Length: 374
Image 1: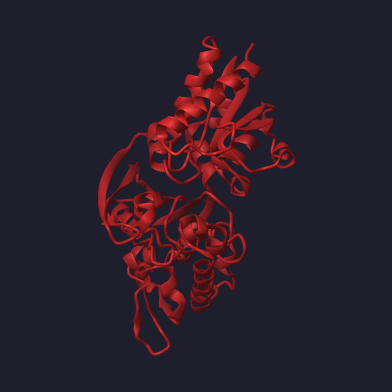
Image 2: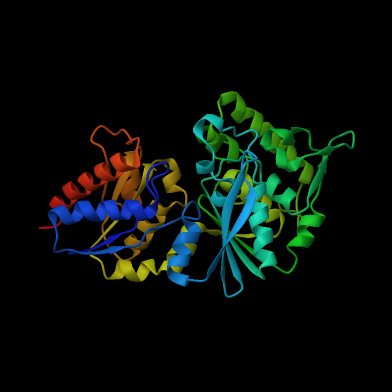
C-alpha cells in the first residue's frame, strides 16, 4: 500500500516533521512493507519557511528582532531568486512567549515588520508572508510601525502602534505613507492560514484571541480597539474596505495590515501545496493521512487538513485525519472528503509533552494501519 503522510504541526507539542515521523513509526509497526511518503505541511503558520526551503532550497538568513512581548528574538528570512519568504510565527509567534507571560492585548507584530524590512534589504522584489501561530491581535499595527507608519489620537498626540492591540482604541489618524514607501515596487503575497475577516465572531479578536491568553473582557476590548483602528484608516481609494476581505483577520489581523500595503491574499495551504508538489504525491498514493493538534472549526477554514482533503477528494483518494483532539462531527468532515478522523489519545486529551504526543500519535497510527493495510 502506498501511503502519503502530510500533517500540519501539533501546536505546542510536535512540529509537522515530528508529527509525520511519529505517524510513520506507528504505521510501520503494523505494515512494515507499505511505501510511505512523508511531506510535512504548513498553511502559512509555524513551519512555513522550513517547508518551502525543503523543496526550493535558497539562502536562510537570521534576523535579530523584537518579539511579541518586547523580548529579543531571532527570526529567519528565506531568499530564493529574488523572492523573500517570511514566517509571521518567527516575528510574533505564540510559541515565543511563555504561557505565563501571554497577553493578547499587549503583544505586537513589530518583529514581522522587521523581517519584511530585512527581506527588502536583501534584495527581495517579491515577499511571501506566511500567517499563523501569532501571539498578537494588533491588526498588523506593530508590523506597520516597524516599516515607518505612525498614528495620533484626537488631541494630535502620538500613539505607539507597536504597543499592542489594546492601545489602538484611541487611534484617530494613521499615516501609512512611510510604510507604503518602504515597500514600494515590492509585491507582497499574504499566505494566510484562515480566511476570516478582521472583525466579528470569526475575526481576529473574537475568533482567535482567547487561544492567545485573552479572557472574555480582553477579547471585547480588542474587538473594540480594532474596530476604532479600522475606522480611522477607512476604505481604500477604490472604495473597498480591507477589514472585510478574506484573510484580513489572519495572524491576529496581520492580513489586514499587509493588505493596507497592497498585499494580495492567497490561501497559505495552496501556496505550500504548490511548492511541495502535493497533488502529484496524492496521485500516486492509495491513502492520504493528514492531521493537526486540534481538528476543530478553524480546520475547515483554509487550514492544512481542509486543503489536503480537498486535493485528495479531487483525485478520489481516501483521507484519514489523526489529531490531538477531534471536535468536528462526522457529517461535517465527510463533506470535506475525509473518510475518518481519530484523536491520538483514546480519552481525547491532548498529551502534554512532545514525547507523550509522539507516542500517542504513533500508537493511533498503528491502529489505523491495522484497519487499512492488510
